[in-house]
Length: 324
Picture 1: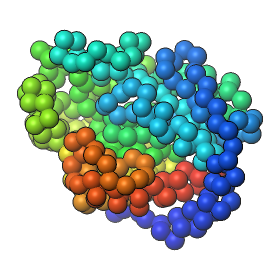
Picture 2 (picture 1 turned 90 degrees about the vertical axis):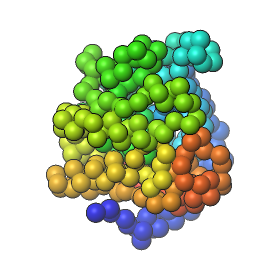
Picture 3 (picture 1 turned 30 degrees about the vertical axis):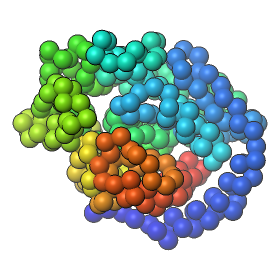
Picture 4 (picture 1 turned 135 degrees about the vertical axis):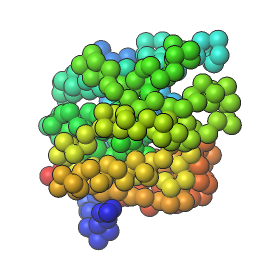
């Protein structure tokens, strides 16, 4: 079911490393704030050479960390990398102070169509070629990315770590006493149909002991009638798609969700590259050795091995998809 092209990827990695990465790594990187998007920024090499745009979409932790971390890395690979913060958790008296007051404090009705406005704004940045447009996303950011890709034909490539095949219920202070009533995402001012959880508030009260994967899986089991309407129509996306998932993901069942995406696209005659790591968890983005992934599942060693295997494949996939 899963498509792997090791020989092709190996050739692309050799080209990327020998022909591109070394010269670019020596160049200066600039950071440009994005007007109209609080805390968003673009990282790029300090010249005006036209380069593909890659938008970084963070997961449920929110904030600027994903952009600050991967913006310079992707810029050195030859992209105009844009970090788009869209959520900053606000649990009032039940949590730490909200870090970024200008952003949504609840993960409720996050507008996916803000991406179109972002693209128009980024087009004014010197060297930003928005006709070559990719998304680099993880977890809830992958959910965001796949919703967008299913609706916008100008998205050319998506890398979706630990993805979802459906839109899930949203959360925030206003949902604590109203479980099952709000969506995570909206489009064109309309909340998207979502799959409810089971036991989200109980999970909040349980803290680190909460079984987040069960909250998702049990909710899905409770509401089979929601499957069709909550499903992201990934088969409408014509661009390049890579999925990365771990079999011991403790956040949600990203392997099942990746399999569903691959199957839906295959039925429509579309190819998907899926990298599945049976012993790995949720903390799969980037490269590097073992680290203490927050409630990732698997082990730090299995996650590190998966990252080290996946990262050169991810960079090769992006190079092929965005540099035709």
